[in-house]
Image 1 (tube, rainbow, N blue to C red):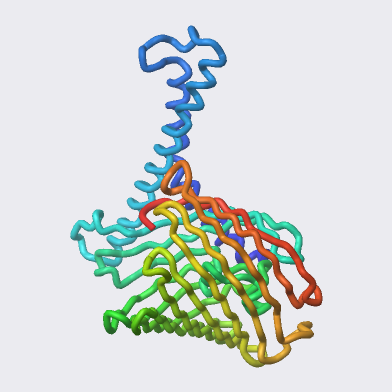
Image 2: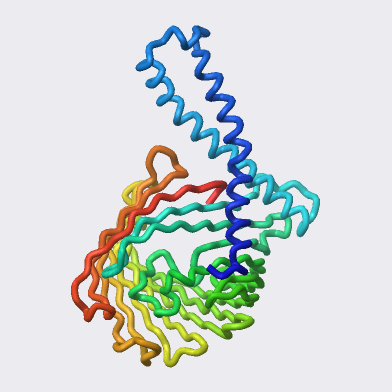
Length: 351
């Protein structure tokens, strides 16, 4: 990893540690007390090892809930301190919609080897500025959507070894109820270097009959890499008259400085929310390039079919996801390849 990027990763780790440090020290004290007392006031030394183990197991949920709640409070306190710098002195704790998300992924993309990775994303809303600003810190690719896959992205974007780390201040301007314009100014790791960047994102959305449509254009300009422009066109329609069941089509067009032509991606899927804590989807993805770049020998990048299951278990802020898939990528001559992803996700704050 580029030495210039190490301080950014260090700061990400430091922030996470600060969120959980007060909790961990308290839990250590609580754990010490629980070893010596029980609810009835009887000393635990009178219990058998099996009874102690059962009691400790029952207390795990209490400790974990306390850790998450304290981390959320510490995070919200940090947000309000940032908010004080930008906004007025009026209280706005009840309006705080900031959140942090931590993901750990075990994945096998098609014909590649198994990979283990993680991402951190923070979205800080500043309500005292009438919610016109966002402070964003992310180790995820801000350009991709939840349904994107490597096969449906340009090779340059899909390169996980160049995973971005970005810090940006976003200014939000809503022109109409169905249109918005966002401006970002920030710093990001890209092409092996830390670069300043500016971003303009315009979005228009609306309904026509039973269809919902959304058009967005993201234009980036990096201080060293130059421009990147991505257009996304989405169409969605409910099925069987149920808002929790719908069909979705997402088409992307992308142009990058230094690359010939455009990259085109397509995602078709059926999505269902079984309950507030369970969701399932079946998707088909494909990618195409209008011109050859680098070592690429084919314009058609391939096709992928996958099943997605997302479930919130144990606690409302804890999720796991399973994505089994089968693909026919250009990288192996369109031979069939099996892959998948297993993810665990933790939420701090109010997503």
